[in-house]
Length: 453
Image 1: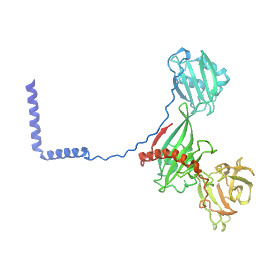
Image 2: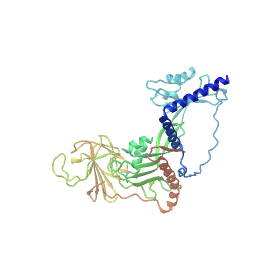
Image 3: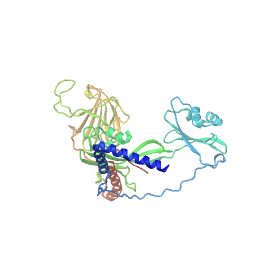
Image 4: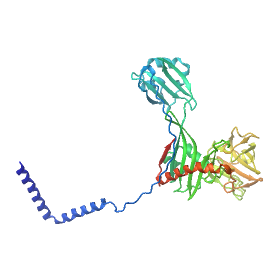
């Protein structure tokens, strides 16, 4: 057997030699390939060193977690929780059956107990959490009715009971990095940022950046914000904690800060120097609006076709778009006034007044003599008066002389007091380092850099 194997191997070698002798060019070809392959996989003699940064953050140790109460029905095993999503056309019996519950007593209880009635007002998309025994009997049911109310049905001492409790909110901080390719919302979507956070980010830096006109491809941002969860379910987005935005090569920043001793009544945003990010007036009273007509002393009037000064700025927007107060002030007038149509006039400090014209209707804040805060909704966009279409006519007047609101130098709000500066710098330093690392890691990509408590 061994002699036959050896002969076979010798015959194969002989055949290979004859093949090579007839095709000498193939030998060169295969040798060339072997050289290329060897060259492609040889590592560099001096591999490039990748710079690394160590960030150390002291975190408090978590308290001991309480053991789950597994004494229901005398069972010693911890309950297994599952979640069912309400579908269109669902009734509570369908949802419970789909979850695998086999407990006729629960159905009777839901029909008879007044506290359980919210289960008959199910809305598609809402969640229902259930803990069942191995036999399909209910241990506990949780239904989130609102951020303040949760219905809990549980079995205690072999009897069912329903109660409304206040759910425990879990607030998580999340960080995202984005790069502008076409629009702010496009970049935010790619980075997984909720629309509400994107709008809030634009509002925080709205006094520094015109997000409709000033954005350029290649601009970037890093933002830290809060998200609220109940029982692990996302229920809403919260406030922005920090944002850094590079627009046309210039960096803008805003950090939420409040004195630890609560001497400041409200938290506010400040840049890295402790200067307030809030201007005394907004550049535009609408969110993400488009300027349809600029301030122009020699404009041709679109209705009367004559040269007539345009003493304000027009912002095109659909009818019903909320109009915000440009600054803190008092409502001086709210009603009809000639070509303005429905008009609101706010009187501010420093002999400043702002006009809001062509409104479709007023909000409850637009009452003569009422104090309003910057950002409060005072009315809604319309096309009343001399208007060719729905838009807001906005005027910014000083000593009753109209000025261009997009070019006027807007005074800032007061900076952080000197006695708080050091505390502010210490609080902001860690956030700045974390955001710098996020940008370095992201490069030109859009990534979710961190989720943390």
